[in-house]
Amino acid sequence: MSSHLRAEERQQGPRQGSTPDALQAANANQASPSGTNLPNAGLDADSLNRKGSTIGARYDQPALAPSTVGASSFQRSHNHTTVYSGRTYDSQNAQGARPREDNDDMASVYSYVSTRSLREFVKEMHGRIFNRLSDAYLLPSDDEEWNRLDKQHSVVTIAMGGLYPCREAVEAILSPVDGVEKKILDLGCGTGSWAIDMAHRFPHCTVLGVDLAPTPMDQATFPPNLSFEIDDINLGLVHFRDSFDLIHMRCVAGGINNLRKALEEIQACLKPGGILVVIDGDYRLCKDMDTIYPVAKLPGDADVSGVSEDGSWMSRVMWGGYHWSHKGSLLTYIKEAHEACTIAGSNIALAVDVLDRGLWDYPLLDPKTAVGGHFFCPLGSWATADDPIQSQTLQYVGILMRQNFLNLHRAYHAILRKHGMQQNVLDEWARMTDEELIKGKRKVWARFTFSCAQRRAGPKLSAPALPASSTPSEPVIDSSQPPFATYQEWYTQERALAERERRLRMYGDRPRAAVRAANANMNHSTQS
Image (cartoon, rainbow, N blue to C red; front, side, top):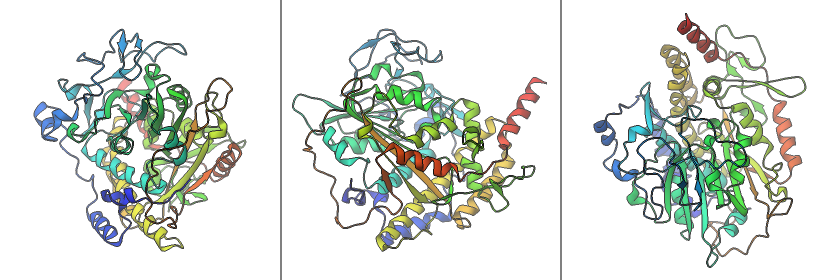
């Protein structure tokens, strides 16, 4: 698989920016970190309409995929038919329990129409806008967050050398076949950037983006083969079974209650031979490729190995770390923002372990087709490599990541306040984190993981042989151009588990998360 940077990425705005001019322009944006001033997030109709002149058009369904639900509340209609499966399923209210196990016939789709009020899908909390469907997903859904997600999209695309890993397999699977409709599903589509890029890249395929909140795109910009729906993966995806040639899920594991169970259900939504691509951020920041960064020490922290007076504030606020038994089993997940997410119902510790293990051990997937890997991105423009092109790309990615994280750590304030943290404490943490990022006081790396595998042709069978691809490969400016400096792939479960074990040995013990104590105090005060 080629991991070179491609001409397509270099010609589309910031994601191409591994040039001196782009580096200079991106660095200029650091003087005033985005996210310092929160927007007016009031949910009255006038203020929502002021968010963009095309607010009504943003949430229309294109003609290719008419709305599948016509009700004006969060109720899944009975005898519901989704345009992507063509089947009918019984449904229940969205506020009810999770769908029944195995042969459940419940759907969880909430397709939206322009006549619906945006207020039905979002809520305001501490000055930010969030989705209404799931408290487990802790990040906002507003202009600031969408800008951050677009930077993240650029980072991942540059590092992988394109829109997806496993390039040869993806392009062969999506290659046109007479009389066969090829379908792509983007779970947790965010701003819709990846889905839109894929719809342009594969105009013969239908592309569906699914997210917890409306996608902030003007329908006038949509290609005709693209549509979006609102859905909560945690409620089940039965209505999508056996439907898609490619399913893509990126950076949503933190909002899923049980990632392994969700992945098993997602795999059932593939056609035989279809491919699943899972990409996510590792919730542990690194000092280098072999060392987890200690977290900054707070008053009252225990004197344990994973905390330091010179530890990272970003690591403290964002990811934290793990505590492991002497046998290597996971005991607790210690962090701040993600501890709040755990309180809200997701299981971050399980998600990270599942991602590290890859896709080799799932009955529906052919392990011979599985690929895993990772890449590291610097949080700043200080990283270098032996090759000057690799250095330039690392530095540009580092600038985007710094901008990304300057927004990201503030995006967690609302969920931390919800669970008992005081704003004055968060403001001090934000000041220390900003200083760390802007001045480059600590050289911190963020790790992304990726996994791909194809669905078997049947029980215990191999995946169907890949067809010859008639899709032109994404163009490469220079075939000798080096890959992203920190990009690695592996092709066996043994290598994936060895990487996992190597990383487990890096962890030190972490102190108790401050938000856990704050939440306990808040609950005690409420009950008193």
